[in-house]
Structures are given as structure tokens and as C-alpha cells.
Amino acid sequence: LEIGEDSRILLDCGLTGLRNKDDILKCAAWLEEKGGVDAVLLSHADLDHIGALPILFGALGIANVPVICTLPVLKMGQLALYDCSLNSSMEGNSAEGGIFSLDDIDRALSDVITVKFNQTVSLHELTKSGKTGNISICAYPAGRTTGGSAWRCKFTNGDILYAMDISLSANSILHGMPMDAFPIAPSVLIMEGVDSQEQTAQSANKGQVVDNILNEIMRTVRDEGKVLIPCETAGKTLDLLKVLGQNWE
Image (tube, rainbow, N blue to C red; front, top):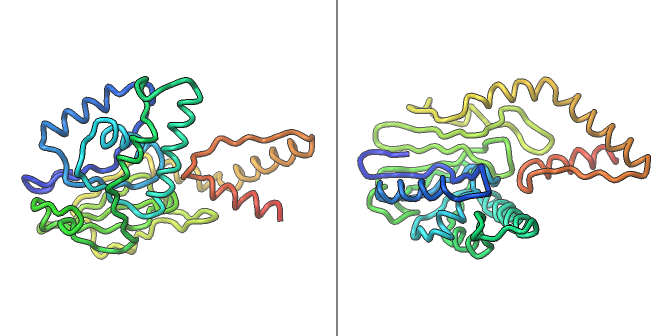
């Protein structure tokens, strides 16, 4: 995100493939060509939003760039990255083979700055960069994951709202994204159009899907079977645990 002539903010730092670093290396070269970035804003604690962080800011050594997120995104994102690295190692891959190491994760997260929801802060105070003097940021609950954020960037001439992977409907743990929390309509809205389509379908079928999952689990357990549910470390794990707990009670 470029604001003005000099200010550049990296919106999330995700990874969609774990087998090679070619795309990430191209991204790093492009960032260097542009003069780097002043800060990184993280929205969620899953690989789609933080997976490339240990490569760009760990293995490749891009330094002195503050990473800004909420405390849950930091803690749960660290778990997700550790899980990814350890799982890759157990599958016989190494850092040289296209994935990051635990040390890369620690280096990438060494300069993280945490903020609270609805807390407006000056980017200049966080980054100590003279190029971000008139920019302030504020994190709002995105509603999809614990600590997940939609970001408002306010500057002299307007507002930018970055709302990636949001949820407008409540689940068993989180409330939906509060659309009435924003003081004014943003000048620019950055989001994925697929969100609204997926959420409409999910809201309509949510009850039936949960019932089907619970029925299948109970049938399997009663037949003395075991159930393994693949789930994102920092995504729907807590939500799933609460649904199972309520059903057990």
C-alpha cells in the first residue's frame, strides 16, 4: 500500500505454496527495488496471511521493518508457523528445500509491535520512520479468527480500510465484524469479493453442516472408531472445540 510518494505498508505477508521460494524471492527483489517498506500489517494468524514472513524477514534477512498486529495474532501465528516448519521437517523437507526454519520464525517475529482493537496509533511513533508522519492506523475485529483484524489507515487526504477475510456473522466464539464501528465511510476499501458469496452460503448451511459433523463424529466414536479433524492451528480450532464441548454437555 503506497500512501503519498514515500510511505509503503505491506498488507499481510502470506504464503500459498511451501515447495519453493521463487515467488517470494521475486517479491523481495521488487520490495528492494521500490525502496523497501516502512511497516507490515498482519490481519490473521494463518499461513495465507503470515506464511511468507519467516522467509522475507527471517531467511532473506530484510531487517528493521516493524511488524504490527494484535497480541492473539502474534501468539497464535507463532504457533501456526512453528507447526508448519515442524510438519515440513517430519515430511523430510528442510529449510533449503523451500520452507523456513524455527530460527527464521524467531527472527521474523523479533520486532513485532502489538496493538489493541479500536486503538488509533501514529505509524510514526511505531516505526520511527520520517516517511509515515501523517499516517495513523487502527485495528478493528475482523470476526473470522481470534485477534483477526481489519485495518484502517488514516492520512491527510482520506481513509483506507483494509478488510481481508472478514466475517459479518457471529460464530460460537467470535462476534462478526462491527460495520458500524467505523466513524466514516472509507475513501478506499480493499477486500476480496469472494467473502460475501462464501459467507452467504456458509450462513445458510452452517447449522446443517455442524449437525452433519457431530452426527458423523458420534457415529464413529460409538463404533469405537477414532476421529481426526484437520484444522488450522489458529483458525477454527477454538470454534470447533466449543461446538464439541457443547455437544458433549
